[in-house]
Image (cartoon, rainbow, N blue to C red; front, side, top):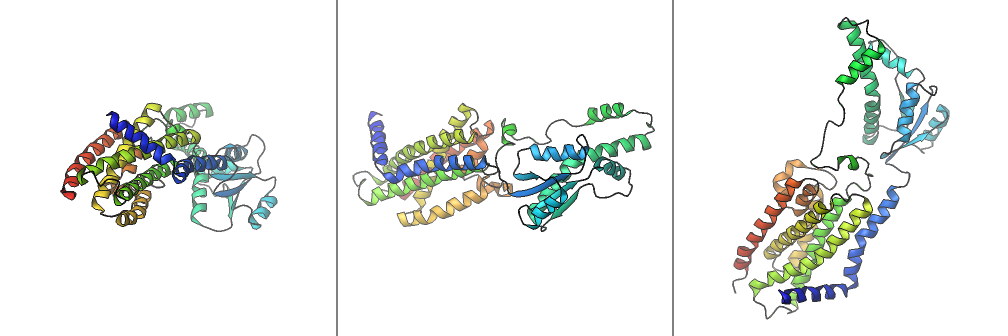
Length: 373
């Protein structure tokens, strides 16, 4: 044990003598810090001009102010007149204009009563693209609660014979039937905090997870380079894999520490015990995954060819930017997918333990078959 500990310390010293290794470790926290600063700036994927014609306490003014005061991936800009907003649109300074009429509440009531009325909100856009279709869905979702109440009140009074109910009684009955809270919940306890994440920072946990796999593959190349240079000539071939595990433990422990620091900078650090346990298991899973790949790749060249393919597959199939659940049978062998699921769900920690145990058990016979000497 003492001999193994001394070897790990010497490996750590050897790595920190390489400028490239230090730069790799510092790369992710510095990138995250820059993105955090950028995400705090006033920006968004789409800019929408908002103009309300209504008085101070009107529904149109309340809905418009709701958009202007919220934090969103959409950027909302207030205009004092319709002409000013349309001019900004024609000059391509914004992507769309939403004009809330003064009689917006009356138009919703007329629409609920199946009467002909003008547009509830005027929407002017430069072009009709997918992103602007999304913004219209956001607009409709904000107006729909007001429309559904008018429809409900109309139905109760006209079809249930309750036309004598006062507005206060209707409101009380409606509130008793209304669902409170979110319809959908994640598997963890951080859903409320996640709702306020910047669109720039949302995928960064997945990016760090993939970066750590890249570091593990780099450590595997480093180990194969040592073998080629004769560093392990006195070590039997079947025992060299344990030196690879040791090297990766040192590399990934440093990367994991930097990753946890990055989570703190981002503000996405969850429960300390959950984060640390998930990271330790993830380091083991990466080591198992990389060494299994290394056993099937005979040379440094074939290992190097695999690295871009492995990273692309993880970015596409793991829930980094999108979640493709139809590829679950493939994702089960990818350590990044296991980690990203485990951070927010304790049940997935058990899956990581099983992954690490089965992978380690598989390494032993494959290593013996590949190195029969």
